[in-house]
Amino acid sequence: MRVVIGVDPHKGSHTAVAIDANEQQLAKILVRSGPRQLEQLLGWATEFGERVWAVESAGGLGYLLAQQLVAAGEEVLDVPATLASRVRTLSTAKSQKTDGNDALSIAIAARGPNVRPVERADHAVVLRLLAKRHRDLGRARKRSA
Image (cartoon, one colour):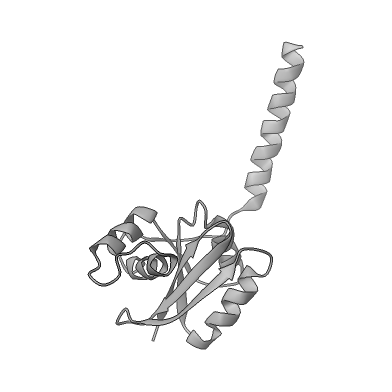
């Protein structure tokens, strides 16, 4: 049985909800954002065996957590916030805007067609772009002076 874990990321905390194939909630956890967030989430998720993580806005607010999970060897999906919101509002039982309900709707939305896998970021490319930008700014400053 493959478990989907939906994560609603925030600056101060992350709420995760695990669901089974029938979209029944198995467990829920609230983890404070910080250096131990990955360790706590992985420790909590060990009981689920085969699992996939669904992180809302893995390119935005959930970027760090999504990259940490991918680096740890986990399968991670990026769920757009609009898709998760649509699932939550169309739900008959849990349409209230709470972190737990948001995480649940993210996990359900991860089964849809508009989700993409998160790939490990190539930090060397990012650093190269930043270094080039720094050189360009230095050259522009010298020209203007």
